Length: 179
Figure 1 (cartoon, helix red, strand yellow):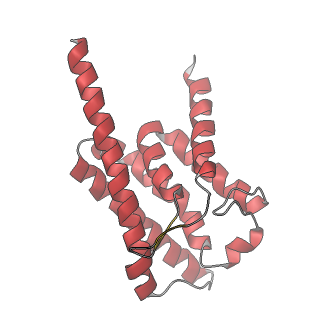
Figure 2 (cartoon, one colour):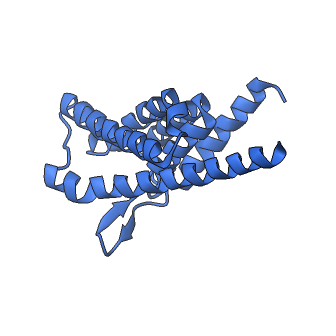
């Protein structure tokens, strides 16, 4: 299979995964953390699929804004660009690009993965703040970010790092047994 066809499949696969994670916020009652899974999938797709993940993320954002019901809660509306979620949605492709650029470093260890996934999520928050400020849109308060958003992003970063660790260990075992 040619690289061009394979890359198209990677874009389609990444797009489908991001869309499937649009089930809406999952509430973890013990921590009261609203949790969506899109950024978790964006992290992992960016590390394992590379640049096609960025294209998949761009397609997700464009199609969601255009009315395809794939955003969180399987909603779609142009009006989302007038809400506090706008900056986060626009930040998804930047988050993905950041991780694609650093993906070889991310795969080295659990600690490296965690560091870069947390940095990517912080970049997402900064981008959302910047975009929403420029567009004069609302943005969550510092207390909401600190007590709700950051714990959610940390949980996803830890989970993504565990996936990277497990995959890396299994690949290492496979390579060792092949020799």
